[in-house]
Structures are given as C-alpha cells and as structure tokens.
Length: 297
Image 1 (tube, helix red, strand yellow):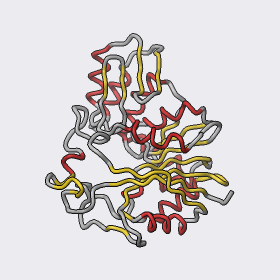
Image 2 (cartoon, rainbow, N blue to C red):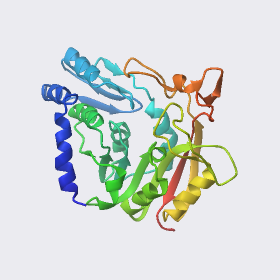
Image 3 (tube, rainbow, N blue to C red):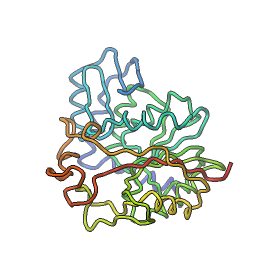
Image 4 (cartoon, rainbow, N blue to C red):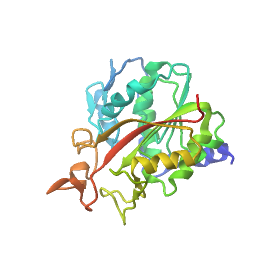
C-alpha cells in the first residue's frame, strides 16, 4: 500500500465545497505568539482579532471533542473529553514514546499528551472537518503533532511503528473488530501497548449485542461485546496481555447538547421513561477501558 498516493488523493478533500471556505478562513488568521495552557480546557490567550476567532470557530461546527478556550471564545464541545482523559491519565506515561491516536478527531487528546514530552505524536483520522479543526487550534498551539488523514487500516503500513497507541471510541464502528485489533497489533513496535475504549454490555458469557439497525441512534455500531468476549477478540488478534483499567456509564454530564454542535446528543439517545435503556430498548451505553500489551514482559 502506497501511503503517499493516498495522502495526495486525500489532500483534495480540502477543496470540497463544504471544507474549502473553512480552509480559506484558516489562511486569513493572523500570525502571532500566544500563551498556551494544556489543562482540562485547552486555553489560548493573548492578543487576537476576537471576532475573527469566534466566526472561524462557528464555521467549523459541529465541535465534538474538547473543550477549548480561544481568547474570549469558549468552545463548549459536545463531549467533555477531559473526563475521559483524566480517567485514563494515571495509566500511562508517554515520555520519549512514539505515540499514535487512532480516530483522533480534532486532536484534543494529542494536545493534552504533550505534557508527557513524548518522542512523537501522530493522529489518524480520515475526516477533512476534524483535520481542519485541528489545524485551527494548532495555529495557536504551534505543536509538532502530525495529523494524518488515514484510518486504522493504514496503521500497519505506516512508516514507523509505535510504542503506544490510543484507540478511543472506534472499535464499535468496525464491522470486523478482530481485523481492526490486528491492525493495531501490527502498528506497534516490540512490547508496545494499546489503550482501548469501547462500548460493552454486562454479562459473564462470551457474547455480544448485534444491533439490528442502530444503537443509541448511531447507525454504524456493529458489535457491543461483554468484557469476556472483548478479551477473546484481543487474544485472537495476537495480544498477549489484556488488563481492564476502568469501566464507566456515559452520562449527560460528559456528553450533551451545546450551542457548538448540530442535532441531537445523549439525552435524545436514551429512553425518556427509562434512561438505563437506549431508545431502541438496548442497555444504555457503558464503556470499558483496557490496556493491551503486544508481547509478554
């Protein structure tokens, strides 16, 4: 697989009629030097054209991951991604590591990961909108993060192997989860690690939920396994160690509708009479966070 040919082809995405005006707005941003804080809220402060910043951010809606504060503009994203990041923070140290984030969205987690001083940070996400949001934020942060318009299927062909891969909220979107896990495995260097986050259902059996048409109003959810079934998938993909780090129930404190998204959010995806179920009648979303290790220590 020639990744350079794929990269060249995907550069054309930036000329799509819905993306081109956003790229033009980026080109019109002023240059400068700003103060950057990489805490729960990624904050940029200093002197800037406040109206231009706000108007550019609004053009790039919907904003899913964050939050960000760009001067006087607070982008209150659909997800309070700091909740997930802080949940996982104690489980990794990225110092001097080559790190990838698969399905990185606008790069919120990548910006946060800089505090560990990793050797390199690479985001993978085949979305022209999210890449443009990343470029907007990075105009002010000025990081050395590399953003690739590539998917998990390209990982094994990438020019370098990674010491640490994050794959948060991607697995349930794949119709062949074991094949995706194999791609993660092949993208790791010797003794590399993955932190994986996916939906799960309660149960002691090795089984999974297969939604008929949608799960929590999301059409591309294919399999929601028990933790035992998930472990079997990971072992079949080649991983030698599987460790459950955390579990959580998604709440409307973490995911909710704001003025920075379009359409519905979690409160619309749950049964209004019984929030323990989705509108389809399935168990409401729960997440399991696991660490996978390529080879035994």
